Length: 323
Image (cartoon, rainbow, N blue to C red; front, top):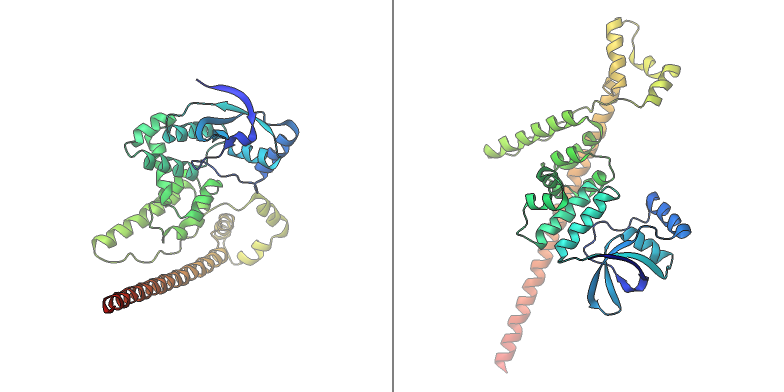
């Protein structure tokens, strides 16, 4: 059974089992806030009955963005759709369906939500979750796999800068390798990117079988089309032509160079990107060393504190025995 009615805002508690936190800095949220301010909440919040707090008989299932808007606007009453949830897992499933039916769930956020479901109910399988969400097992597996991405890369996926398909392959790399391929994940076409990742995975596995470390990743130019505006500007200014085309070049060489420039593959651009890539590699290596040094110092401090604690316990014991 379910029903739609209006309740006091203060009667609703939020849940720790939320799919997406409110993103009040986003333009979409500001637009939603302005809409609710003038029109009120037109799509009811989804809640379930709760007996944890007598003063808050309802727990939020879906609609955290609208709930946050209502809180910011100090709304006294809000419309709600009361649904039955047999368990926390059932609640998560309803959250997922609500997001699949509304604003598109971000891939990495969906992966985190599914992981919570599997932790809450270890008997669940990928196939079972797929049936619950009306999604294929491969869709579910791909989202789960995104949990292996570094947090900042997950944000790029949820922002739409890296597609779920490319993120799925990027997640197959060790965490310390992933930042090396973020730029190509954004810029390259999926087939080219996936081929490069597969080659890197093979290098890592072959090295592991041989009992060696994989060779350091090498710079690979990212072939991508320049913005149309940049190409149009070049047609008027001829700046790139002046620096790239030599009067002694043949027509074919000139044509090839022009195409290279259009695809970011001309020598100056490649060298600029190589220098930037090498600088980023150096910065990552330095940060890795600094992080290792911090971890070492922290472990040494913890060991020292533990030794002092043991020594004090011994001294206290000796003191007690002497008495």
